[in-house]
Image (cartoon, rainbow, N blue to C red; front, side, top):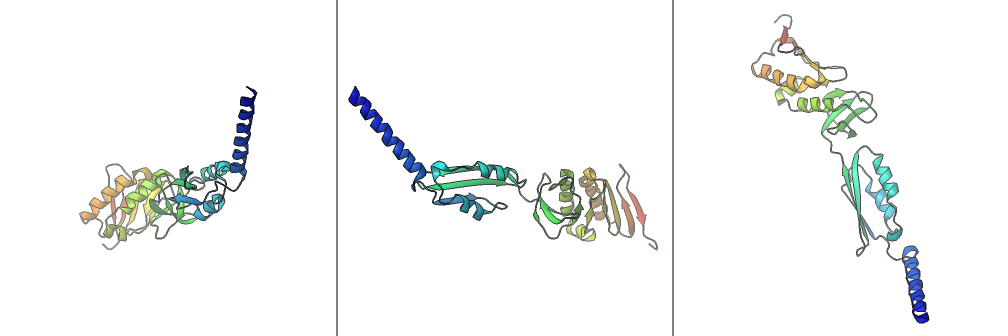
Length: 221
């Protein structure tokens, strides 16, 4: 019995020393870090943070906290490959959907929920942010409908202004579309008027009213 207890103590001591050696020694260190995908998160920063770290003492909680504070990131998960000593980090990020010229900030891509992502060029829709880093989702839907206009019609109305409660396009002709939430529906009516040739010679096209289209001809026409 005494010999068995001595053997048990010896085994436990060996296991304790081995665990300490692996945890605090130079073994089991991360040799490779893979980040996929990473549009907004700096890959070099993640690689430098974890490359060479001891796998048994790897603490990813600061990373999750940092990513949770970035509105462009939807979520992330990590996998450890002990045999290859590799850390794999998969990041789910928001996707740019439409470009907006945001008052006081410049032109940016936004996603479907209105989260501001990255700088853009050639934005054809002006809007205001409703909160830091975000525009209203209804602005995004209106901008998407605007971008789907036929090319000749889009060239005629290069800019849509959504900075107030009602949508306006300078034209000519000046285009009044009413409430922003109704813009996709009103643009369907606008396309029908254009196909019928009813926009020619007009100074104002007013689509704000239900079931009524107001056309005001330009002077001298």
